[in-house]
Image (spheres, rainbow, N blue to C red):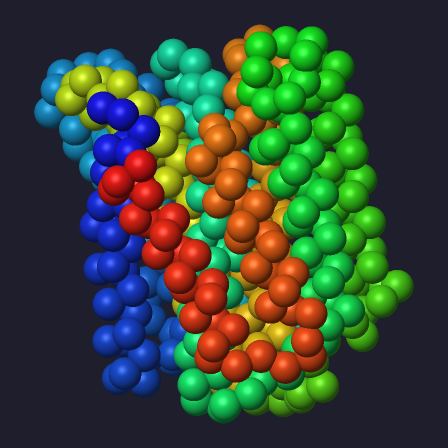
Length: 401
C-alpha cells in the first residue's frame, strides 16, 4: 500500500474510533450529564481506574497480543484498545477540569502536557514493538501540525467569525506561538532532508542530539514566557468566573488524581495497542504502516483538544482556542521529537524525520497562511476559510497525491 492509501486508512481508523465517543459525549451533555462537580457520569470516575487495573492485570498475568492462542490475543488487543481509547477522552476531560480551575495560560499547559504524554507513550511503544518504524514520529508530527494549523484553527476562525462577526486575538501571543512553531518545524521536519552527514531525511547521532536539546530549550523558554515573563500576552481580556464557580476545589483534586491514574494506565496499555495495530497491518500486508499509525495517533489525540478549541471560539474566547490548538502543535514537536529521538539513540533504531517534497510544500504553506492570518488583531470568518481551503487541499492530496 502506498503512502496515500496508508493515510486514507489512517483517517478511516480515526473516524471509526473517535466519532462514537464524541457522539456519546454530546448525548450526555444534552441531558445535563456534566463532567464537572456532582453531575459527573460514572464513566468519568471509573475509566481511569479501569485502564490502570487492566494494564496491571495484563502485565502481571503475562498475557500479550504476541503470545497465546488467537482468541486470547484478539481479546487482549480488543479490550486494551477499547479501554485506552475511551480513557483518553475521559483523561483529557479531567485535564480540562483542572485547566479551568488553574486559569489561563496554565490551563492550556495542563491540556497540552496531557495530550503530549499520551502521544509520546503511543509513539515510543510502537517504535519499540516489532520491526523498526523510522518514519512513524515524522508522520505523526506532520499530521499534528497540519491538522492544528489548518483544520482546527480554520474551524475556530470560521465558526467563531460567523457567530461573532469579528473576534479579537492577542497578536503578541500568537506571534510567539508562530515563531516557535516555525523554528521547530523547519529544524526537525525540513532540515534533515538537506544535511549531508547521513542519508537524506535523517540526522546523525550528534545532529539528532543537538536538535533535540535545542527543541527542549526553545519550548521551555516559550513556556517560561507564557506563564511567567509575558503571561499577559497569552491571556485574552475576559473573565472565567463560570469555570471557577463550577470547578470546586474537591472536584479538581479528584480530577487531578484521576488524570494521573488514567495517564499511567494509558502509557501501560499503549504497548498492547501498538502490538495489536502492527500485527493487524502485517496480517493485511500493509507496507506503509507508519503513515496509517501516524495519522491515527494525530487524529486520536487531537480530537478532544479540537473540540475544546472550537467551543472556546464559539464562546468568543478565540485566544484560548488558539492557545489550545497552537500550543498542541508546539508541544508535539518540542517534546515528542526529543522523546522519540532519545528512544532512537538508546535503542539504536533508525529515525527518519525529513519530509518528502509535497509534504514540505504543504507545511510551509500552512505556516505562511498562519503568519498572515495573525498579523492583525481581529479575525473574521474569511480568515478561517483560507485555513479550511488549505486543509481540504491537504486532505485531497491524501486521496490523489
